[in-house]
Length: 233
Ligand SMILES: C[S@@+](CC[C@H](N)C(=O)[O-])C[C@H]1O[C@@H](n2cnc3c(N)ncnc32)[C@H](O)[C@@H]1O
Image (cartoon, rainbow, N blue to C red; front, top):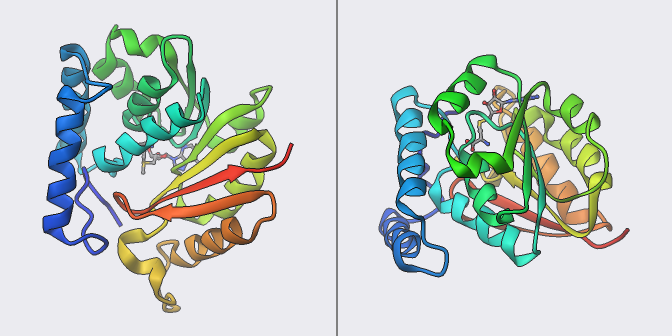
């Protein structure tokens, strides 16, 4: 299922969604972490590119959560499983601040080419590196712990991503995952014909809520953003 630029419906009433979007835009211009003009232009370029291609971005409603959650834990080192051309990385780059680092992974070379072209020499890019590699291999190639790990790959791989990511988080670090409400589909038992990953997402949602290492909840933002804090070393 493709969800270009915040086009998800079915979770929030459209009027509520548009009210929240309006407040979010206000925060981007005059709130405590406003976008400077060059960031606003980069954000616009990324969104336009996604719209042209029907690319399934996390969208700005969840993007603002990525930034705020990163700031809440004073996150400086972030890993992304599934980066595309760096839209979610844009929000993390704002969240980690000038000394922070966002390490991403993307299997498709053409997404990395778009990343290069769209980001150019924007100053935020100094905080972001995206590896042209499978997400699991890219994570395994890193050393040390992360403050935050974000999962946004093929939905069938979410349960494996949980197992790979948790050991790599520091205590108090966050595991975030996008699309966990899947346009509302995870709220009902998938039919045998549903091969889009609904059953895997339901398994993932159950696992994060029953894992003794984690405290989890799901924010009904965008397509559903799960937030899990690691409680143990
Ligand atoms: C839903 S898109 C989201 C990208 C980005 N997080 C965003 O919000 O803009 C998921 C991306 O993950 C990539 N991807 C999917 N499975 C992957 C894997 N196992 N390893 C690396 N990249 C993967 C896809 O090619 C796609 O570009």
